[in-house]
Amino acid sequence: MSLVRPMDQSTTSFRNPKLYSLKKSSDISGLSPQIFSSDKHITTTYISDPYSAESYEKYLLDSPSSSGISGYRDVHPYFELEGQSPDSVDYDEDKMRLKLLELERALLAENDNFDEIFQSMDVDGEWSDPVRLHDSPKETTSSDSVISSIGSSTKEITQTSSRTPRQMLINCASAVSDGNYADASTIINEVRQMVSIQGDPSERIAAYMTEGLAARLASSGKVLYKALKCKEPPSSDRLAAMQILIEVCPCFKFGFMAANGAIIEAFKDEKRVHIIDFDISQGSQYIQLIQTIASLPGKPPHIRLTGVDDPDSIQRLVGGLRTIGLRLEALAEQLKVPFEFQAVPSKTSIVTPSMLDCRPSEAIIVNFTFQLHHMPDESVSTVNERDQLLRLAKSLNPKLVTIVEQDMNTNTAPFFPRFIEAYNYYSAVYDSLDATLPRESQDRMNVEKQCLARDIVNIVACEGQERIERYEVAGKWRARMIMAGFNSQPWSANVIEMIRNLIRQYSERYKLKEDLGGLHFGWEEKSLIVASAWR
Image (cartoon, rainbow, N blue to C red):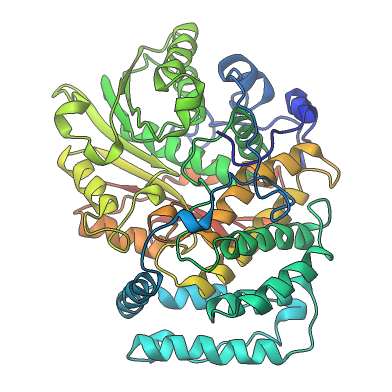
C-alpha cells in the first residue's frame, strides 16, 4: 500500500542511459576487476555500471503496481496519507508524554555522541546569526542543562526578524516542541504559500519538512502518529524511484561499492563463501558483486547468498525475496559464477543461527547495508533488537561484517534537535540531487517524493515504535560494534582510490574521508553515508 500518490509515468526517462551525464565520462563505472591486484602499474579499468538503466531493465523487473490511498489530502498537499482518526487511538496521553520525557532525559545523560547533534545544528549563510547554540552538552553534567540550552536558543530564534522558510520552520518546530500547536499551525500555513516541490533545493526541503510538521500536528498533539502507516511496504512506484536514487546520488551507490570491495578482499583464497544479508532490498548490491567477481582473474569462489525474507520488508511487494534470488541466479549463471541463493522466511528479530544453515567449509560474511537503523534499540524496547542482531552476527564467527548507514542521529535525539539534524542532512541531499538531475526533472521529483519525503515524515512526525527511520552517527555504530565484540578492519588503499576516481566523475563537491576506520561519503562538508568493516 503506497504512502504517496503513484509516480508519474514519465519516469521512463530513467531507462535512457544518456539521461545522467557525468563530469568526465558518460559511463558510470563499477568496481574494477583489477583494483585488488598488488601490481601498482596496472591501469585500472572498470566494468559496466550495474546500476545503469540496462541492468535494472533486465534484472529488476517492475512489480505489480498498487493503487493510491486517499486521505488527508487537504492537510498534506504533496502526498496522500492513509486516513485514520486520531480519536481512535486509545491511551493516556499525559502518562505517555511523561514516560517519553523520562526516557529522553535518561538517553540525553548517557549519549556520548550528543555533541555531534549540536555540531550538525550549525547553519551557514543567512541563518547563522539567528541560530545560536550555547554550551556544549559535554561541558554540562545533567540532561536538564542540555534541554535548557535548547530552550535558550529557541528564544533567540523567535526574536529574530528573519522570515525565510527555514527559519520559520525552525520556529515552528520549537513551537511544536513547547506544545504551542496554534502558533505552529499558523506558521505551517504561511510557509506553504512560500515553498514548492518544484523550486530550488531550499524550497523543496522546506516543503517536505513542512508536511512532516503538519503530519505531526494532524494527530491532535498525540505522541504517536497513527494516521501515517509508516511501516507499510512501499509501492512499485517507490521501488523504481529507489533505483533512480541509487543511480543519481553517488553517496548511496558508493556505500554499496565500499561494502563489496571489502567483501571481495575478505574472500581472497577462499573456495566457498557464505554471505548473509538481513535486508537484500532489490538485490542491487549483489548485481554489482556478481559482475565484479566474474571479471576477476582466476576461478571464482562458490558464492552462497542467504537473505532473510522478513514479512515487513520491501521485497514482499515484488513477489518475495525468492523472486529477487531467481534474478540473481540467472545473472550468475550467465556470467559463469558459481552461485546459490536461499531465502529464510522469518522476522529478522527472531532469526537464529540454525536457520541460516552455516557450514564449516564456508567463510562467513555478514552484510548490513541500510538495514540496522530499522531495528529498534534500547530507547524503544528493553529487547534491544539492534544489539541483539549484532550479537547474533558475532556468534556466527564471521570473517567479515560490513555496515553501511546514513550518518545522522534520528534515534535518541529529542524532537527539536532531531528536526534540526534532519533538516541539515536532507538539505545536503537535496542540494546534491540538483547537481545530478535538472530542476525540471520528473525523476528528481519522484525520488524526493517517493523515497526522501517518506523518511522525512517518519523522522519528524512519528514517535515510539512508529518511528522506524532511527539513524545513528558513525561513533555510535562504532561503540555498538565494539560492545558486540568486533574489531575494526582497515580499508584497502585500492578500494579507497577506486571510489575517489568515481567521485571525480560526478562533482568535486562530493567528498570522501576516512576516519576511525569508517569511510564517510558526503556532500561538501556534510557527511551523508558511512561504511565500515569489522571482524
